[in-house]
Length: 487
Ligand SMILES: *Cc1c(COP(=O)(O)O)cnc(C)c1O
Figure 1 (cartoon, rainbow, N blue to C red):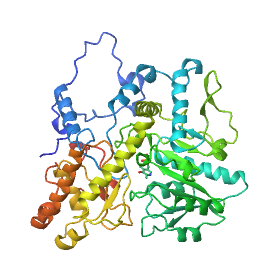
Figure 2: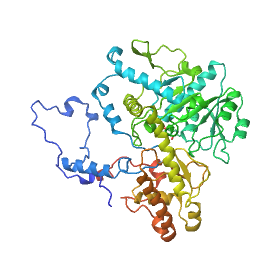
Figure 3: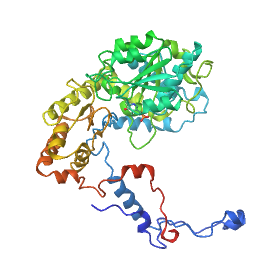
Figure 4: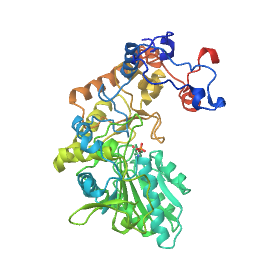
């Protein structure tokens, strides 16, 4: 498979993708309206291509992408599940797409009601008292939630800066705390993959603003000691932050608010019907327990029994964290998703997510090692330790080889505390047949490692380019085409 050529390389002088009628107004020349030093000296080196060239070029590029609409995508922690097209359809209704945030409230009562009800659904799902829909992503929700925690401590005359985060946490947790100048203290995981409660007791003190916890965590394990953990943190006046990015493990089964959490964020773009992965708009609503409601960002969407309105009259608020009320069309999708499924459907989401993950884990456990001998929740972590020892094939090689089987690799080398980790999240939307195909591919790669390890170590073989220098791609990306004449 050859790489798709750059559109510049397809250029042919004079070729055009448009035909416009002859100019019927006087032509304005740049020198008539612009100062001389603002006028370019040379024509820009733009690609000159026909319409069909443009269409083929971008269609070819799009077809090189792997997406969940193309195939299995078990990227742990990222919840790359299928998002029902009905959510897309609803979010494209002109009544939602053509309104403006500055329109008078009485003309957008439907949109406000949708947001108000979504706030209430998320309160019910999270076991919290109020929700802000403003944050635009999970990490943004974390920063918002931590600011609420800071505001709470300050309202009590305390400046607490220490945030305790488990060593299995998602990278955004310490990053968010760091961004706010808070001091991150790591707590170890115990032999069952949960928070080491003894170490936690030693770490929590009067400077502790709170604990950030993902439950189930990125190992896919539910912390069995959550009640005790909440008690330890609360006993010193700290608060509990719930990273709910992976709520597809708990919907309708456990509510973070009931297990002692004070602040919760959700990732609507993982759990509630918005496709993600391309950097598109997301949404990370934050919910809080009663004593923190007054600190939520402004505005929240309120209802006075007759009309819906934006409530700006909240003097203790941390202020807005995004313009207006967040990414509205993502909220529409979440609303459609929740309404389409209903309480029983949401519970079934989590039951299937957990069932699928345990099924695949069990099928792979004879060939790959499991760091923790427990049932998992929505995801699990495996290790190719025997394979590495006997054949030299590593996690990276297995991940790359999966691409040749038409499967997106799982998250790898994360969480950091598990050597050679492969973190698999099948999600709830996959059929038994698809899960079996994945299992077959993983077992086939294990056999290949023994019989033909070179094929695995040099994978992928089916893509235009093989192994990239990922560090260089991140640190020194080439984002601009430099024409021959400028080199
Ligand atoms: C994805 C994820 C986040 C961050 O969410 P973004 O929307 O990407 O900022 C935080 N925590 C966990 C556990 C996640 O999986």
